[in-house]
Amino acid sequence: MTNSDLSKLRDEIDQIDNQILDLLNQRAAVVVAVGKAKEVSEESTFYVPSREKAIYERLTRQNPGPFPNEAVSKVFREIISASLNMEMPMQVAFLGPQSTFTHMAAMLQFGLSAQLVPLKSIPAVFEEVERDRVQYGVVPVENSTEGVVNHTLDMFFDSELQMIAEIMLEISHNLLSKSGDIGQISKIVSHPQPLAQCRHWLETNMPDIPLLDVASTAAAAQMAAEDGSVAAIASHAAAIQYDLQVVKAKIEDNPHNFTRFLVIGKKTPENSGADKTSIMFSVKDEPGILYRMLEPFSKRQINLAKIESRPMKQKAWEYIFFLDLIGHVDDLEISAAIEELRGYCHFLKILGSYPIARNESLSGEKL
Image (cartoon, rainbow, N blue to C red; front, top):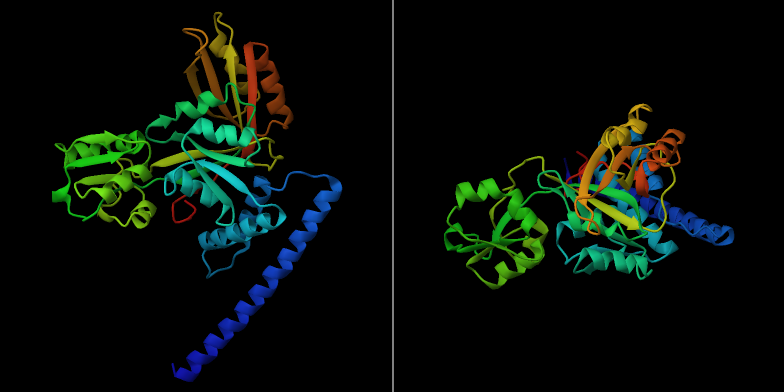
């Protein structure tokens, strides 16, 4: 290929880029019109997870290539993020600090145009949303290796916030240090969850090195940056932010290690056609009650995705059940099953209906 041929191809790319820019601005003009129409109709919902999901699915389904589908989703996530910010600056609280996996989940869900606010605790995230200081919050709720995040589930007992979306994120842990030299490590620090998720690797490869729990993976990375004898278990993003070297990558015991995060807000999304509904309830203590609490779903052939129990703090030896089921609360069969279950309960609360998440890696690839 001659220099002239290469120059022509580059000119063609420039022309296409100009067309893309024109189309982005045409899309932005329509977004502005949508925002004005919402003001007239008093429609307050501007973030609609089901709408976003439908856009990603339609575009990836229609994509003929060679541009990869995972890149299509990433590009349009940022387009949608910027568009939403034009309608209303979006503020999202998350369990921080920056470079934690919750931070990455928030970026994957809301894009880089959203204002992401790191907070020190799960209750603080709930409070920011409840007091309308932010529109949404992102908190971890479950890991495929270590199970549920109990503190998140407990918050829903008193909170009126709804689950409005879920994020399924593949979690990969790295051993990081200032030098990258495994021989200089005398202590390993991380959040308790990553330490547990890497337990076997640590016992096999570094059995004599003491482990220390800290508040977050980002806090662990900061400690490693300040002390050459400390190694952190944290994300690749934390390595970049704190200028650390990767001693060993992908040290999680389970290669299919996913964490589920929840987006919390004040209004349940509309039915997307592929939803999950979460409820919490406490049943009356009587013979056969466990069977009867599942029967309303069984006889309607409703798929139960998860059932979890937590001790009720107000009463010893009584339990709260958390149930995830496939379907939207507006579906007739779903609402009928929940109402039948209510008759067996001391109390029952619908925590939200939201689109079923796809699994994503930290690179944004659909898995």
